[in-house]
Length: 361
Image 1 (tube, helix red, strand yellow):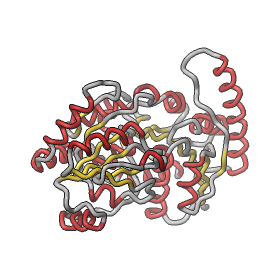
Image 2: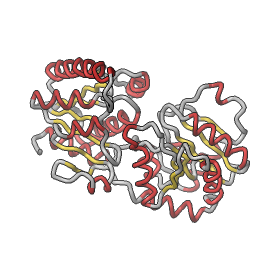
Image 3: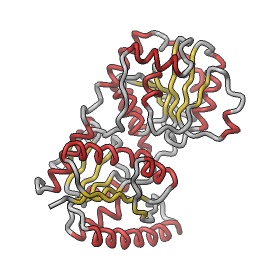
Image 4: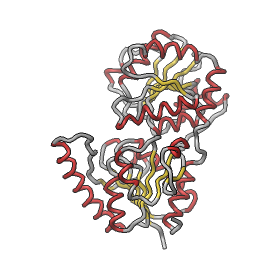
């Protein structure tokens, strides 16, 4: 019998991309199967899916407020509607398994799958689970963890290390990296700093990179992410903006180190390329998960962590970039970052998902 899988993944690229990586690995390993993707209908989610020829089902969902207010009632009503929609989708599609990567869309499908007796697997991208996955984990058959350190936080047979599934990207040796830099017009610089503010970009990192570029004329700054056109006018000549990228191979192959926020997907990709990083966690991340992620990489020796609200951040960033002109230091930090990687994470997760749908759990 042909298997059917429902992937509940939406909200940000950080939730959508791991689900797509697992889906693609399942195709490679097990051939054809039926699939339905469900998201909350934001423009970014839809653009990522449609770029891959996937038209997802849209189910309305909303975050769960952490403080009592009228917003709690509005959110509760919206999530009750989401649960009703999730039940309707599951009854109509009748999947053999639900796979969710968390976010607002994950919890209604975890509840609905439990109510209908459908196995549900939850994947957690961050070091610590957020509220949605914490609730979903109580209903799930298994919870797949991205980082080894998470196993010291979550214990028991339900929690399994799979690693962080990332999108497929081209890897290059040193000669190939030099060719990529030359093609991008970056070959004349002593160092290329990749600046990664997430799929929507970060105006704070854009301004910081611009200020650093004025002090470091022999260092190039390569920006990935969407930024307003008016904010890109008048940037120093050693700042290059690549825009929003579906394919990030050139960005990582050209970067000698990365100045970044600390979303789990970005960190997994940075570590997989054995790149050192200077991390400035987004202070608005739910539950402070970006700071937790960043400190994990720092503990491993693969990153330095700065804070957005600290008045010394610019001076410290400038000092760190000067230190990282040393290729030996970059190499050592990059190897330490790479030590955090769980190899073949997408394939590991795909095998677990398939086995669970086959009655293996």
